[in-house]
Length: 143
Image (cartoon, rainbow, N blue to C red):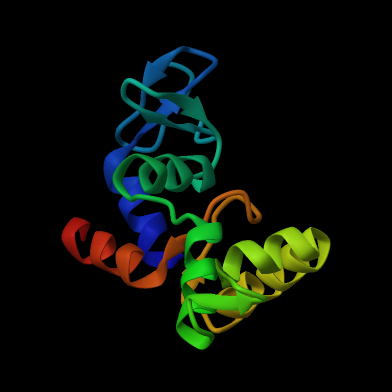
């Protein structure tokens, strides 16, 4: 987060909302306030850098499809198909259709495990996830 915050500061300018002027020195030249917001050109102005970080990540990285990675893990752990009577069916489809609630619980536990292991990162409390290595590459390219 420290490196992402540095990138956010590099890509934004201090802004005095009271005077509605840029304050690149960190102090407003008109009112002399140092209580400044951050301006991200073409996006907006707000206090702090969390919103800047979230915007930069959303704009520059692809979020992952949690359904897709969970289904891929199931396919890797079990055979891709299961035989039920004379039918050969997708293991994932059978599991999802037989107990969709348990399927969702298992998927959420799997994703939580990836987050706990720091393989996945989220910047919006779990609405979207990004691979840690993608975030790391973004930081290396922008610092």
